[in-house]
Image (cartoon, rainbow, N blue to C red):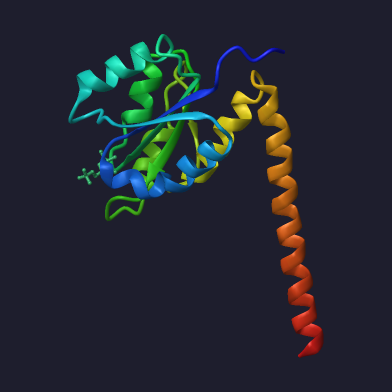
Length: 170
Ligand code: RP5
């Protein structure tokens, strides 16, 4: 398949305080040459902006949205309500409930409006999952993902060998 446009992802965060959870994700997406827009946009504090962003996302050329929020985290669900683009949700640990509040708010979507939810503070996995979804339409991403996995496996193997040596040497 010929790629006619660059893949484009939006990371939409409920607050700038969510950004540390997404820093590795931004690095990953950049490394994969995926155009990445990061936007602060709250389902509760700026609801009009959140719905507008989601409604216009497909026309703006986005392929996928990553919604990031803590506490009563309605942002990914609101984004999903207003678009047919796939939405990945990242629950953030931002309260005394250690992210359980955000996790349940994001994962327990009603039938008809799915949000693909990653682990609490799982920003990097959201970026990897986004890339895997995009790879269906952007074949070059597939090869890069294979390299990424191979490198990861090699590093684990190196760590295992180092540990075995340490155990043997005492
Ligand atoms: C949520 O409330 C945000 O996504 C953030 O995780 C949390 C706290 O926001 P701030 O008070 O730090 O802006 O809407």
